[in-house]
Structures are given as C-alpha cells and as structure tokens.
Image (cartoon, rainbow, N blue to C red; front, side, top):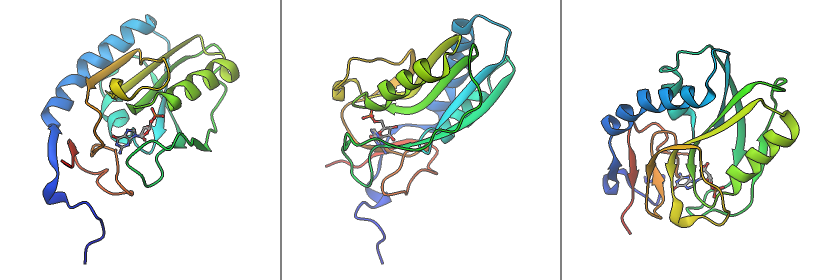
Length: 181
Ligand code: 5GP
C-alpha cells in the first residue's frame, strides 16, 4: 500500500546532512555577534518545520538561551504556498525589551516572515529582533522581505526533509531533498 503519491525512492538530495551541519557553528556565531550582548537570547522556534534546524542551531550558542515554540501553518497539504496563514499557537512569555531570534525553516513568498516580524515588533517590543532561516527561496518572493541570516539559497522547488514535510511526512530525514518533476 502506498501512503503517499511521492515515493522516497524518487527523492533527490539537494543539501546533505554534512553540508547543513557544517553551516551551523558559524551561523550561531554570526547571530550572537549581531545581538552583541551577553544577555539571554529568546529563540523562537516556528513549528513544525524549523524544529530540526532550531534544535541543532541552539547547541552552538554561547549566550544563555530561552527556547519558545509557536505554531503557524501556511502550506496545508499542497506543494505551493496557499497564501493562507493559520496561526495555530502564538503563546509566548513577555518579550518586552528582550533579545529575540525567530528561527524559520524556509522563506518562500515571504508572507510568514512578514506576519511574524510585524507581530513581534507590534505586540512584543523586543530590544532586538533577528530573523534566521535555514533556506531562502528568493525567486518565489511575493513580499519585499529578506531574512537577517540564512544558510542556503535554493531554486523554486518544493523541498522536504530536516523538518520540512510533504503531507506530514519526511520531516525526519537528516538532509534536504526534492522530487524531480
Ligand atoms: P511563505 O509564507 O514564505 O510563503 O512560506 C513559509 C512556509 O511555507 C515555511 O515555513 C514552510 O512551512 C512552507 N514552505 C515553503 N516552501 C516550502 C517547501 O519547499 N517545502 C516545504 N515542505 N514547505 C515549504
């Protein structure tokens, strides 16, 4: 029985586990440098897609870290952004005057990034807000927004793995892959 219309045997590796892991120590260093403080950093993991990236990234921070989790959905079960953002859980502590790092899996149209950065600026008044994304699908952008930091720029393909899913599957892969059309 096939559970999915996309089979793992057709999946091609786009970014290997080694390539991903190699980027993380320097990324953490660059982010801490940008905060320029010894104070704690509130790391906001945007579920579900950024779970792997966030968990691996925080291991490299030297500053004290608080981890928070919010949940947003934008793709549903499609491979194209629906432009239909669903905020599922935005429960957070008081972040007023705190150093806040939003950790995303991928910036595609930019809608989620815009929604989140506006929300944090307007509602939480952080001392400094930094937005980091593992992947940047620049060519798919509909909103004029760029992450402060990203690890890899990719073409306009639908990717899975390392937290990113197709119909809820493939998040557990340690690499980023895609299904050739
Ligand atoms: P945006 O709001 O920038 O269009 O989309 C951001 C969200 O869409 C990401 O956090 C991610 O959940 C989802 N997304 C965008 N591109 C992809 C992709 O190539 N693969 C997967 N699995 N999700 C994606």
